[in-house]
Image (cartoon, rainbow, N blue to C red; front, top):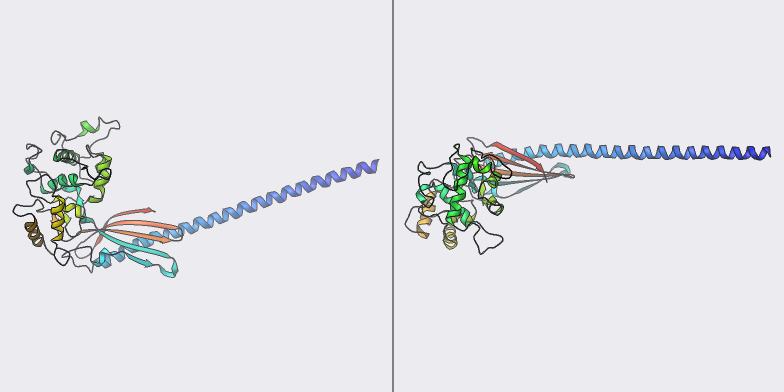
Length: 347
């Protein structure tokens, strides 16, 4: 009886020891898995940081390469068929990854800050009077009416000069420094502070295209349609006729007209480009204009150029799982280009 009881006790002790051993083994295994996972995660993070640092370094090297490339370009006239208009793919050393450099003409789009310049009699003349507006403002009024309507291609997005001039008045108020509405459709702080989510007018030149969507009369549909055709540069910057989108040809019309050039006239004007495919000077454009439209002064005086001052550089780097993009605004200077704005992000 005693021997049986002792044997049972020994079995229980051995069972308890076995359970403890199993628990220790399980704990050690769990800790091992955790430490291994943490180690692998640490390696992955370190690798990502390293690749990210490398990608960022290559973004900057892309700027240097583009500046050297542009330095060889003839500054007399710029057009997309030049070498700068072609994307340049580059294989990084040791098959590390890929780099893609592409340049675009920043002067190919309408500069919104041209609208901030107003004539002295702007406030005293009627919105329907074309002489009230600068040539840049006339071109923008026509651009609004020429915008494509994705929802209904047969109906204009901005259906009349009256609607277009109302938006222009609100834009003038957004950029000027006074508090007096620029006409019956202007909008100063009194209007914006009365909105459900109140805010104030900028009362300064545009700093980004996105500001447009905050302005009275600029609907989401108009904003979406405008975005491909507008930019924000210093107020003196004008359009390069050799690189601007074809739609912007409709913005050129007689200086007495608020309506855009007809589609057929715009196509005829584009077809009159020189055989070289670009205008070497504005006199050649004026010849084409007179041939297509005839007598009458175009409202493009002072608003068109054949050369470019600003270029947007887009650099895309792929290293491992790291993909980064950078945008740099390059200014053509004398003697060299320089970076005046830089944007960086991940794709």
